[in-house]
Length: 426
Ligand SMILES: [Zn+2]
Image (cartoon, rainbow, N blue to C red):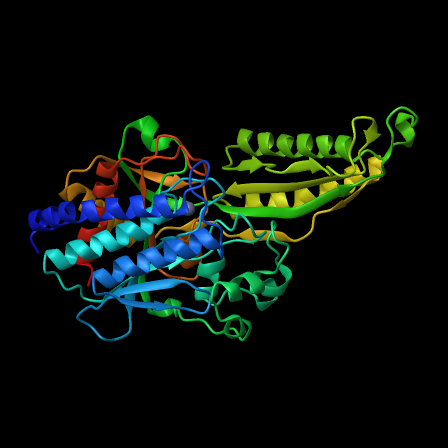
């Protein structure tokens, strides 16, 4: 393989990638940004568009029971072991065009470059478009990648409901053409032992690369998280003028204390040098029942702690429960935290990271090592035992918002690193 020829082949594949991004934006745009609801219209369109692009490259195109998309370039070997380049094709409501999609388009662009440079890889290379990673409409996580790996418990299909429609995950999956019965029976297509490597290119979701002035980063690890996404604090509604303080069971003031105490725990962890971020993303009274003159009897909320350290996630789960218990007793309110979900922190494979760095150096691309604060499908693969690595692309405006952005030149550098790594993998 000639490094310069491959670089030229990557350059030649970028205009097609750019056009694909444009089509994707056009087909899934919202009032602001793009909306690709998990197992909804936008995600369906994105999957159809990528499948079409893969067929133009003569790739084998298949789907699994959960609707994940697999687009495969055959390698020289036929031992059933292969490499996956994956990312998701759903978005948050009114999100950016590149979060998720950049990884799938990068995979297709890297394959197009290999084909153009007449390189047949040693093993099959599959670009995987996953489903429901953002899962902004469902109170769960990474639906597609977990289903592909056989890690989606069947009960989630019927107990998880989409926030806007109230219908179950199974309902929405069936509507999107998935084989729900196969999922119920625990059938899945990926054998983690046969995936030699999983790569994911993703826009950075924070400001680090932009701030430090690097177009790409090689990810060192992914924070895990512990969350309660359907939590509620219930007290008693009462007259805002007539009930004295000692007789109140005020859900809002109880929640204010709860939030404050959890922030205090975060401060303690940070002061001790621990890695953590903590967010209460939802915190609301019932619009049908609340009034300015009424003591609030109910607050619904979410809690989300993320860390590279499992012990810190354990501690926060304990603290969620203990503070709820204490404040509940003290203020005469009842906390129901609902289901608490856990994602383990994921370590990136040192061998694959070294390969990415090798490519970075070959093309003299400015890059840094960088941890991932956000979760990714890559974390599920890493925790399933698949050697995993990630490339981040600079993003000047953060993600999960319509201003998210990515320079196509930065993207091209990421594809270069990916293509060279794939070309040199045995
Ligand atoms: Zn993403």
